[in-house]
Length: 251
Image (cartoon, rainbow, N blue to C red; front, side):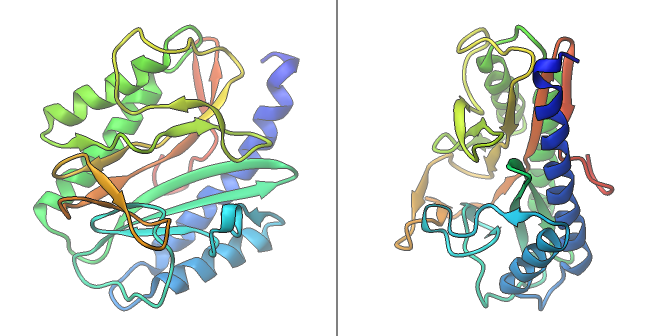
């Protein structure tokens, strides 16, 4: 590993492991009857206890420490007194800021027993992310990532959200490049060794279109179909990439 980015990789991995650990703790409490406020409190306390800060808190005015997006909420759901019920699906998105570096990850959880269609959507969403991560290496194009995700997801009968994307990350929470989860192979910027960014496909059971609710944050599917998301923060190497947000439960 080049000395130029060895430090950035190491520091991002520390932050990423804290974020992943928070989601591992969330996994332990997800069940019917739990409120999204309780999830937020757990994430805040876990990240704080590990000497880090919950980056979403007050970021551009966001009021909570994590995003909790249930069922047809695509992303940026705000934790509240909302109670989870049997059959719900919920994406929890956390970012830990440790020693000036960010680690960003999200995971979609099942609340009790879920429908067959929810199960299929969750599996396809996770697999689409991992398929994209598998092709990342120095020299490929950003469009290769989007094409890989879109081709697989649409083959499975689902749609890719186009209003939100992955992003560069490091000392800054969100920065270039924008990592689209759809597109054409061979298009876009070439990826270089040392780059750090997120891959975080949001996949809908129905149409890809979304809208923002009156709170200015919560994005939902226009057709109220289910939506799922997974996210990893990764660093590009010469012949592949390193995942900084691996957990003990799911990679």
